[in-house]
Amino acid sequence: MHEIDLNKKDLRTDLILEKQYKNLESKTTKYKDIEIITTKYKNNNYTTIYFNDATDKDNYLNLEKVLIKELKKYINIKENDTILVVGLGNSKSTPDALGPCTIDSILVTRHLKLLNVLDKDYSVVSTFKPSVMGTTGIESIDLIKNIIKDIKATKVIAIDALKASKIERLVKTIQITDSGIHPGSGINNNRGEVSKNTMKTDVISIGIPTVVDIKTILESILEEEIELDENLILTPTDIDYQIEKLSKLLSISINKTLHKKLYPTK
Image (cartoon, rainbow, N blue to C red):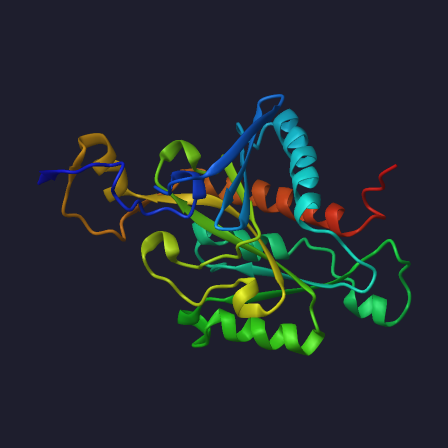
């Protein structure tokens, strides 16, 4: 083993505030016990929300209010918009099931809007769960591209479980960004990115860290580089319950953001 400079080390994380980037422009505000940090990096916007236990009723309700407010800053619904909500991840692996579980409770309206049975206070929304390449044999990016083209989607909302470098961030952080999402980037396993550049339409990504790799934790404690399998990960013991609560939080907040009928404002 040898000593490492943690400030120069490329941490295995998906969170913008944990990456060792220079010249990050950040601003912090608070609502009750919730911390909201807005960050600008390379013309992309990020919002990081730190919160306490989302399984607590009061925390949950406060967090929902904050999340809807922040989502509205990224998602400006226009009359002719068609929104595709994508749940990335593997429903058979609980720490990676945030995206698919969120999709299960998204209010889908495209088929009803085509029949003219919903009023203008409901947006045109479709959902898709591409699963993982190990299951389908097809890259998620290729599937999503084809669906966008087929339904003429004007906005994409991508939801995925993220990787953090600090234990205290697990299931207590939400990251929203217009930079898109890079599945596997936190574990140096970059798949095709889901972004405006690749999808040719606006992409907003929402993620919550559910795992941290043990190698990163030990190196942070020991301040030494160690040889250890980077595929060894740590996740909360109650991850099943956390995914259930957090996916419901995301789906309700997205529904209320997309459909004025569900969350009317003065």
